[in-house]
Length: 47
Image (cartoon, rainbow, N blue to C red; front, side, top):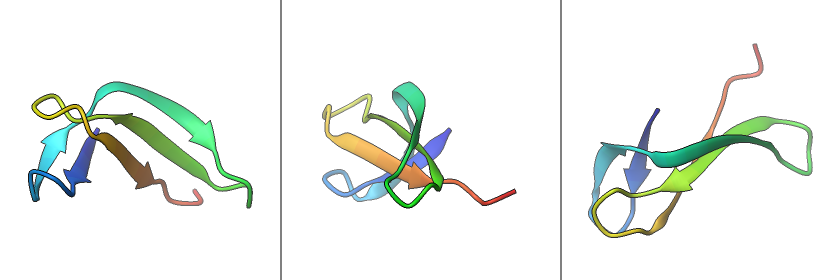
């Protein structure tokens, strides 16, 4: 799963990605940047 890293300022493949549910019920993927270790987050579509 690709996500945007705000520290590296580019899209990268997430490391240790896991599917989570936000407070509003939407699904998201949460992981870490493989280079700098910053937390990455990507909101998934409703479908």
